[in-house]
Structures are given as C-alpha cells and as structure tokens.
Image (cartoon, rainbow, N blue to C red):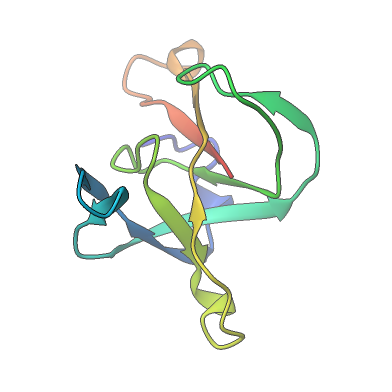
Length: 113
C-alpha cells in the first residue's frame, strides 16, 4: 500500500468482478461484490483502452491502493447507491509505481470508467 496517498482514500466503492462471459446471453458473468477504499472524481477526457483499442470519453476516475479491481470489472461509489446509480465498467487500469518513495511502497491504481 502506498503511504503517500493512503490518507486521501476516504470514500468507499463497491466492485463487481467479472468472472466469465456467457456465450448464450452475450453478457458478462459477475462474482460477489466487494468493497474498496478509494478517492474518485468525475472527469470527462478522451482515452483509449490499451486492452481493446476502443476510444471513449471517461466519466469517472477512481484512485485506490487496492490491487484487486481489473479491466472489465464494474464499480460504483457507495455514496451513489442511495441515488440508485448504475454500475460503470472499468475500461482502463492505470498503475502508478511508488518505489521512488521507498522499497516498501506498493503501487497505486487509477480505475478509469
């Protein structure tokens, strides 16, 4: 975990991991949701997914030290559950090495939806 940014991860988000793809329904199959600590911001910028080559306009970027979320998983802030916000798919997973701050520092991640 990055002690450099840990203080800023005060929000909770729910992540729904993608497990498989159902060829009959043409839809992803998701596992049980889990919680992560994060910070997020709404941000609209043009990005390209390195996994698919797809160009898209971002809607939200989550910052976290939790390594579990992956490309294709879905995420939503817990604060938006009350408002009924739907899940957003993680389209890009950015990794920010923190080794320059010390050998024990693990990377932080940007989850782009």
